[in-house]
Image (cartoon, rainbow, N blue to C red; front, top):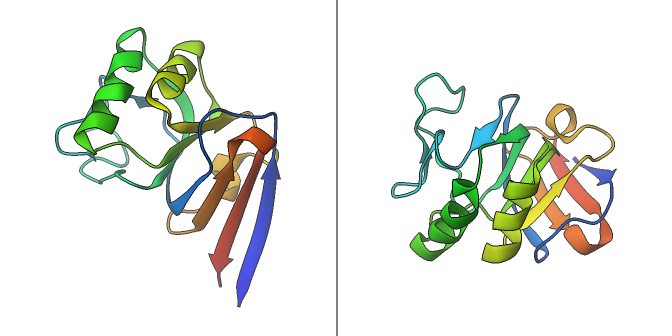
Amino acid sequence: MAETIIIRGNPGVGPPVEGEAIVSEEGFSARYDYDRYRGVISRKSHVLYGQSIVGKIAVFKTSKGGVATSWMMLDMVERGTCPAGFIFGRTNPVMVQGAVWANVALMHDLDPDPVQTIRTGDYVKMIPEKGIVEVTRVS
């Protein structure tokens, strides 16, 4: 039986998107954690090391990184190696700037906590302009 969970928060950025979730309690840096050429987590100490986030709803505890994040986000989109969307427990202005520039869905500061609520493999629909995330879990 399928269960639907609604997570809410302030409006995010980017278009409505949906896809399979991949979740990590760790943070995410587009520069230091991600191989934007292959679309996989590349930092060996990251819990998702070697896993692809391409086309998925990537859920991370926090965003990390500085100014390189903005242009890297656009580069990921142009290479076809970007997630469909990002959900963070908490993000930073540089990650939001990159998402806006690249037209990537991004939301954060949601209730209940998305990192604790969403599971890898859940089907997630993000509606950033409304501040709504719909999570479908098949039990």
